Image (tube, rainbow, N blue to C red; front, side):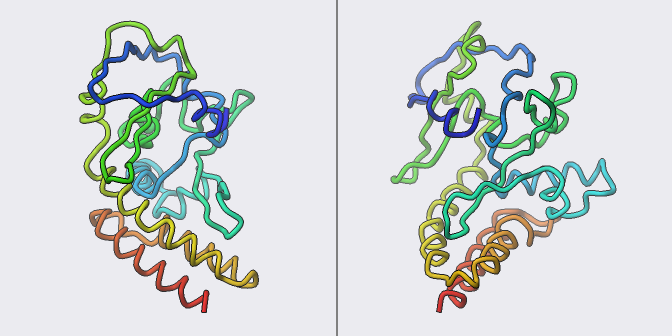
Length: 224
């Protein structure tokens, strides 16, 4: 199931609602997930920090990206996002072992807030949806959407999304203006400032805000 199919099973939900949901640790939500688990910049940052403590081969975000992600092109201009790699005949998440998440402490936001989907609306406030692609999960005691999100959809997540959404149009517009012969260079700049050029021992958000400004400045030079 790709990300378009996942989104087709979602519908808007109020934070005041309650939804019956119970995780049975079946691992089904972690299978058949090719091109359906997006990795945002803070996801890559957190996962790299976790894995560098376990694996000497993971030192920086580039190491994580090379080993555990694949690129998904969103626009012909070169605007892309990273997706989590899958493995096996059932296209399972690469971090699923014996029906358990091996990176639970730093799992991507998409996984952390499941079965809900969260975003930021045009008014800057959070918006929520519920994903019903695994109907057998919707049993048991009801969970309160607002409480669920308060525990799992962090203030850092919200701040990141606001910054990301406010810059996305400008970045895409600049990338569309860049000549074809500079396209690869533009994509490398996008990669560098969105997924690479971070000090893992410093707070994420300040670095991301600075990186967005540097990315737009660098793309503007290529677009001249």
